[in-house]
Image (tube, helix red, strand yellow):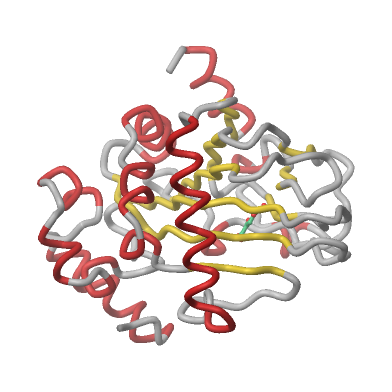
Length: 257
Ligand SMILES: O=C(O)CCC(=O)C(=O)O
């Protein structure tokens, strides 16, 4: 990653990597996502959360090798480390597809409702465009620079669901990856086209914070058995602190296998 890219990520809170995915990876991810939606049917995403006019998948590291390959990518991890520091781990991998022809958009939010703390940033998301993101098919919006505001949109704005005067729409071709400081105010917008808009979210956090989805508990034994030492580190499989903090969240949220 260049100094200019890292500077953009720090200043604006996001960095777009156009056409980052190789065609083979994009096609493998598309196929696996289609299979999972077909297999899971009405239950898709229900282990984590349902959202109106949106199709979701959760716990994707367990559900396809292609997701693990994506979240372990060295360039992406360089971006994550630039935001969070070297002590990061995977928090969750989800898929989010905005249904066609509706007006549902997410309020501006910071992921996990998190503000930077005394040690700095602790959440960073990556958005893997499975479909093109255009101005009218429900691209992610964000308000550049707000990751440094020290405020959550729900506290700072009268209506976080309303358009923000300084927001921009993050667009790109399928295969583009966006690294986003997840303290940045952002959210999915309405998909007014006739086709769905799908993205994979590889979400990371600092190692002293709980995972959104407790990987050690959620990954089947056969998936864990195939992990390399580096992947075990990334997923915090052998991390006693993670066992305490993430298990507690998993029990509270009910997201346990
Ligand atoms: O899919 C998107 O465009 C953004 C989704 C998002 O911010 C979220 O689900 O928290």
